[in-house]
Length: 173
Image 1 (tube, helix red, strand yellow):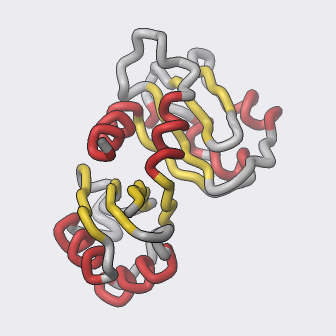
Image 2 (image 1 turned 90 degrees about the vertical axis):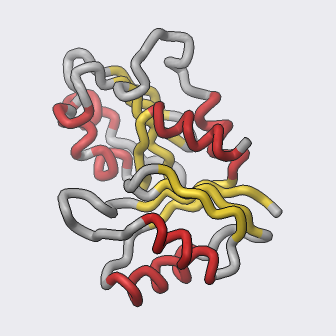
Image 3 (image 1 turned 90 degrees about the horizontal axis):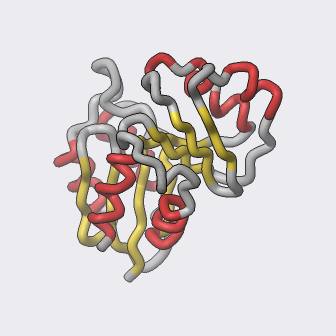
């Protein structure tokens, strides 16, 4: 069995797309996944599977029961950890809520000029092959860059703050 991290997008945000984590665990277990664990209500899952989780089957099951289809990024546990370990800001004394890691679904075709133009005066970022690391010390809610990040990167992805990434890494152990 291999471990995977599932990052669901756009659930339980602002009263929309409500998906209780208990129900999500039950859906995933019914689909045959094992050792299913969730973290907070924003769609963070660690599970075990023989093969890469079937994102379409999962979204179809959620849609059937809850009436919406969240986008899902299924990441092998080793890759999730490697991206976290490659954090270029890890030696800095940053509060984990100010550093965000966007796990990317594929290679970025980034609009670097657009990213630079939207970056706040206190923000820093690093783009790698599998992730964007964004240090937003004024808060992610105030970041103009965060609002347009997928369009600017030219690839789907989903971000989590460093506190959440660390918790998911502990769940993989």
